[in-house]
Amino acid sequence: MQNKLIFITIDGLRFDTAVSQMGYINHLVEKGKAARYKVQSELPSMSRPLYEVLLTGTPAYQNGITHNGVVRLSHEKSLFHLTKEQGKTNATASYYWVSELYSRAPFLPERDRFQFEGTHAIERGIFYWEDHYPDSHLFADANYLLHTYKPDFLYIHSMNVDDDGHKFTSDSKQYRGRDIGADIILAHALPQWLKEGYQVIVTADHGMNTDGLHGGTTFEERSVPLYIISEKVKPQIVEEEIPQLQLAPLACHLLNIQPSSAMQPLTIPGVVGASE
Image 1 (spheres, one colour):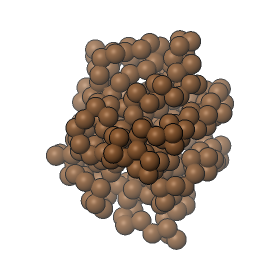
Image 2 (cartoon, helix red, strand yellow):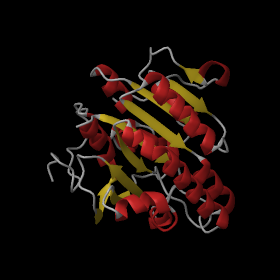
Image 3 (cartoon, helix red, strand yellow):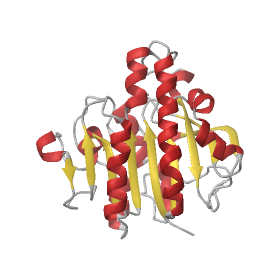
Image 4 (cartoon, one colour):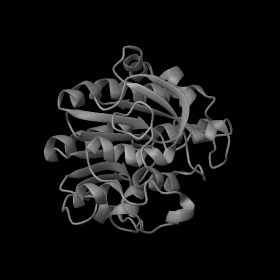
């Protein structure tokens, strides 16, 4: 059983829009090749705090990343720290806030766009700093890292869905079309990744409301999808909403590494070996 993982965060992707618009990933669910869950994001439903939630499994009151303007390195053990400490390799193609949390802060494009030296928690990274940086380019960056370094853990973070949600709201042709575009990218990449022995998680940090905003407590802002393709997870649809704090320990389980002491015990239904 493989212990390699690709973890994809599609920024700003609502649960209901993912289910209605993303044909390929839901095809895998329909045919018994993937599991689908509904996740309730932590609060505040803002990007930088939720990157920290996804990658460290800790809530904002504990980790101190309480809003988007907190620019400093994380004080918690992230999936990047844990993989490196436990003899596995990691890489990421992500928005620059991920670099500011786990590599260097503040982010300087001329210094920090490409990080291949392996001296930080993030061992290999390619970062972008404009929200409209094309998802097609981002996934090309990710594939470069994948094929050049063959990391055990690859984190991919795309921004175009969130960008169009802010520009046009979640109830728009542009937002729905961008979700379809992300699904097409996955349809192109996933078969090869699975052939190369990777497990895959696809999720989101937060959703988007019909004002083109997020940060609050509504279903539209907090309810996000989780798709898992792994031999360690039963292919099914789980209607019960699971807490977002479960995703970091889930990633540790799939990678076969020890979670940090700050993470919750893993209790996601259908995960082989989880304490359901």
